[in-house]
Each structure stands twice: as C-alpha cells, then as structure tokens.
Image (tube, rainbow, N blue to C red; front, side):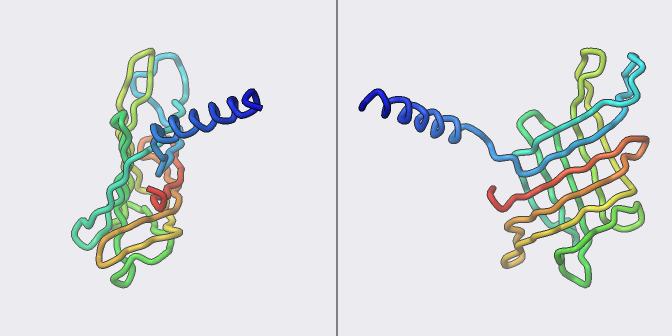
Length: 163
C-alpha cells in the first residue's frame, strides 16, 4: 500500500514546492523586430517575453498599465478615457491620441545581449475586462496588436485578475 502512496505524496510535494516558487505570468509579448546590431543577414529577431509584475496608475487623466519581469523587460500602455471613464473597449494607438504602446526587451544579437526600445503609432489595445474600485485599478485584462515603428510587429495578451 505505501508503495502506491509514496509516489502520490512525492508528486504533491513537488507540486506545492514548485507552485509556490513560480511567478504568475500577467502579460505576454510576441514580437518580430530587427536588431540593429544583427550582421548575420537575418531579417528579424523573434522576441517572446513573459511579464510577471503589474502596476496600474493614473497619468493625468489617462491610465497607465505597466508590466515588467525580473530580467528587466518592460511593457507599457497608456489609454485615454472615453467619455470620462475606462470602459471595456478597443483603444486605437494611432500616434495622434494619448493612447500609447512602448516596450523594452532584450534580444541576443551576434551572441551579445541587446536592449531594444519598441514604440508604435499604429495598432490597438483591447480592454476586455477592467475593475476599478474607488478610483484604483484593481485588475485589467485584454490583448493588443501593434506595428513597431521602424519595422516589425508585436501582439500579446494581459490579465492581472489572478495577480
């Protein structure tokens, strides 16, 4: 009997140990960008980044969604209110409105880490769920797709409800 229970207990112990140490991903970025130091003839670099930290804040009347990870990568959105509030909606990133996208990610180019700053003036961020309580952003979820200024594209999702 104990031969059957021991593997189950060991599996549960491993699950609790690793689950407690693992950080929850709250946002994901998948991008195709050109690294300026790339001399190998490659057209672009593929960047896939998980973000584990989230801070929502007010920036004037706008809402700033900031994601980061322990490696130093960042992902930021600024969205302007629609009729004085932040409804579930699509927010155009067009270079004309206050809505904005930016990210800093590190890629390996010619075996050397290179930090890229990504911005966009063409795309959108969809807020599919948002919880603001007493003026404080509690959680937000959605997705985004942008064309990177200077070439490339990025897309991803975010959900801070479990954070």
